Amino acid sequence: MSTITEVPAVPIAFKRNAREALADPQLRRNFRGAMDFLMDKRRAQFPDGDELERLRAFGNRVRARALSKLPELLERLDANLSRNGVRVHWAETVDEANAIVHRIVEQHAAKKVIKGKSMVSEEMEMNHYLGERGVDCLESDMGEFIVQLREEKPSHIIMPAIHLNVGQVASLFHDKLEVDYTEDVDRLIQIGRETLRRNFFEADIGVSGVNFAIAETGTLLLVENEGNGRMSTTVPPVHIAVTGIEKVVENLRDVVPLLSLLTRSATGQAITTYVNLISGPRKANELDGPQEVHLVLLDNGRSQAFADGELRQTLNCIRCGACMNHCPVYTRIGGHAYGTVYPGPIGKIITPHMLGLDTTRDLPTASSMCGACGEVCPVKIPIPALLRRLREEAVRPPEAEPHHMRGQGTKYSKKEAMVWKAWRKMNTSPALYRALTFAGTRLSALMPSRIGPWTEHRSAPKPAARTLHELAREHLGES
Image (tube, rainbow, N blue to C red):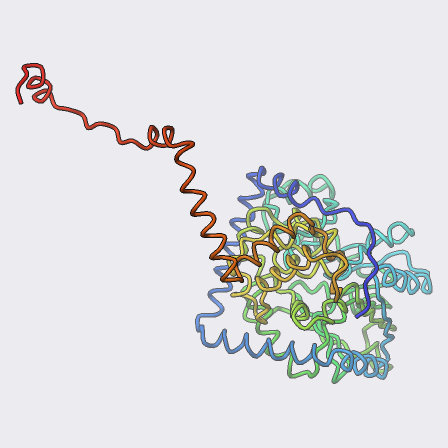
């Protein structure tokens, strides 16, 4: 594998962010309550531990098989989508992906884009990119809409506004949407829905993510609970889907166990409200749907993970968020402290491939290594093992071959390396270990002559307290 060119990077200020989050009692209460609720919901969906383990093993096999054929499946997906009338675009970087989206926007002279939930679009910072070029990009997922109003990033990959409570959302809507203050959840949802509904019909282009891309049929599958994804992909005349290259699966039947694992692990639902299958633009005899459908396949460091047999397991992720919900670190500091699009345990293993270890140097060590993330992962990603591997990559000499990751050696120190090399040599050589142990024993035998009086003074036992009877006998001279 060729050496990856290193580029200067500013490390994410994770430690500072974590300290600030820990000092916010409201944030900690919000997350503690939300995580407990989500863990209980997931537990109720898997009362049979044997069923869960069978599903996890099956899901792992499905994802591993797809990744083992990734180049072939991506070519099949491209061919079948193209046959269905979907225009497929490939992007190696987020800059390329944004340029592709903007080119489509320009071709249609579009000024307004409405988005369904998409973590890849967050990864691309699409809203900011289009906004700088005069294109209004509105989030239609309720959680994403809330954090967009607050000018924040999502704090969770499934529930973007989970760091907020009802009062904070009520104040936000009152200030930004100029509506009466209310903490009635149903009314708040209606306010958001009324605000968003007219935008679906005014938008020139709809953007969505993709949960699974099915190579066999050339189908894009999206899951959601609010209906905004369905509106974003059918009402505007143009639909652009953006996804990472790892989301491809081989067959339609492979999706069934993955959907069962995804919804139950993410939100504790037996099945999500909407499952959308998109296989092309509107046909001549159809009454609704977009006239054009585009798919942007983004790499952005995923090929780097794919190239390594162990690190490839990172790409198994189905974006359920269960690892976050059970992580003691994430629960205490929230998602924004990580400073990246993907927080929590999955973010700590996938973001270094996207941004480089030099930028994310503190993320692999931001873990208690309790193993909860690996135990609950529905597709059995060995997250603790991958965290250890990334820690190793961070302290490997920058010039060492093979060069697996951008930012390799970001925590490497020659002095520390020499100390640990000597320690390893001593503990792997019986003869050297015995010699050093003998020398240490002899040295310790010489030490009392120099510090003996001090040691004896400090270690001498205190005299036992004498009774009044004993003192009287001593004073009278009795034996």
